[in-house]
Length: 80
Image 1 (cartoon, rainbow, N blue to C red):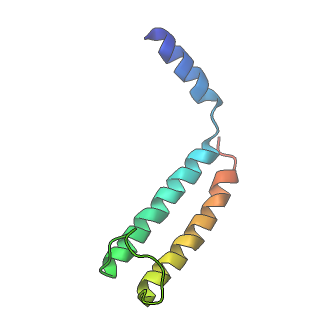
Image 2: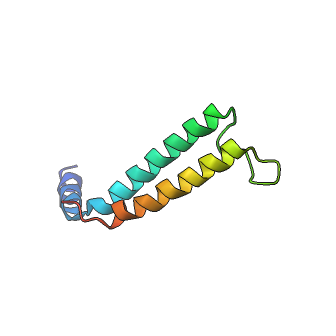
């Protein structure tokens, strides 16, 4: 058990937080998208973008794409 803790502490010390920030950012984007879908009365992940897709859902999808693109900056930003 001690060896595991020493190895874990060493690895954690070498990790960069950029990928962690990227993952946290994407999680936040998805949480907002789920709320957006719920406000439109639809379950996130069930709708396929087709001709009959409500405009609110297309807006949610567009906002999700912009948010996810913004997360790239968080992924590349150096975080101590």
